[in-house]
Picture 1: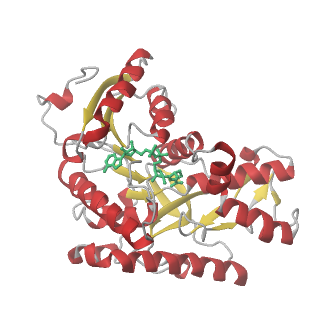
Picture 2 (picture 1 turned 180 degrees about the vertical axis):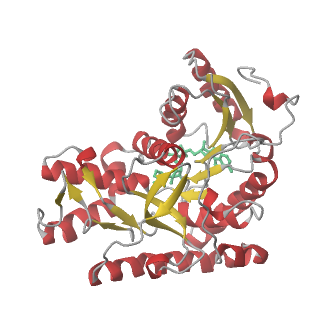
Picture 3 (picture 1 turned 120 degrees about the vertical axis):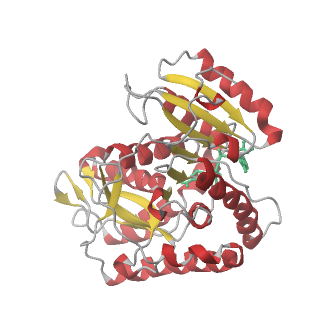
Length: 362
Ligand code: NAX
């Protein structure tokens, strides 16, 4: 039996987590041979609701769940964790400007970055799902000076999966028969879903679709799919977001089997993208780490689309720049490439502490 891994989920009493937690507990993320300890984090006002969710998890009797702990702050909740699924974020309330939203989330993700830095496993992998995901991820990473910026990702996998699903439907193929789709940039309506290097059953996709369908129907549909779901369902995407979070973390940890996946990662300047922002690139994952696929052709249209979404991220960064610790700026721009990235289990946590006990709910 493998040693259990510790997974923190923030916003654990919310909608996305209500799907995500049960999938993780069933072994869909890290495999059905990987026991897990779930460290659930919420704001103090949501702790009762969180207890109810934890009771339901307990009632499922998942054999892989070796413990569930509930926390109202990240410094407790992130102790010794190997994986962080950061779902909780401040939603935009009525009358709130974008800058206010960025600032409200900056407070949350600064604190969570510090907590990861102080108490998480040194090899932790953190995925930001809460919006604005890319800039939240930047804030998180900049507040964790002792962790590598490549240990942080923003989720654009839902946009990637949406592209595969809608394209598969159009071409009459299974989404798993498609490869080479990239969603570039920000998880926002400026994202660029690029099909120019995509293949379906080994045949070029771009040769099989109409350019005007691609540019005027497919692209805006992917960019605004979240709003379309809200319009029909009356609620925002939850199960599909949970599935995407799970897919992202599974591929990052266990490998993408040679397939290209879109991940919001620290830009190292590839494809001319400004260094130091979290931008979605085409990646292949292997041995617990990702690599940017470097040699894809980007045409003039693609370049202008990539610039637009980069510009938006630079503007978001400018809006929160005064809140970012200056001393982590350079290390996020002068990156080294690591060749390994396997999660180690030497997490320095005192095995006698309460966090190591496999109590079901404590
Ligand atoms: P909910 O409002 O249902 O749940 C959010 C939960 O987070 C709440 O229970 C809240 O109490 C908690 N929370 C807030 N601040 C927290 C903090 N500081 N620490 C811990 N918990 C905290 O939202 P849900 O539908 O689950 O969506 C969560 C986030 O995902 C939102 O920011 C949403 O915009 C974002 N999304 C991101 C997507 C992506 O592709 N990156 C797609 C889906 C989704 O829109």
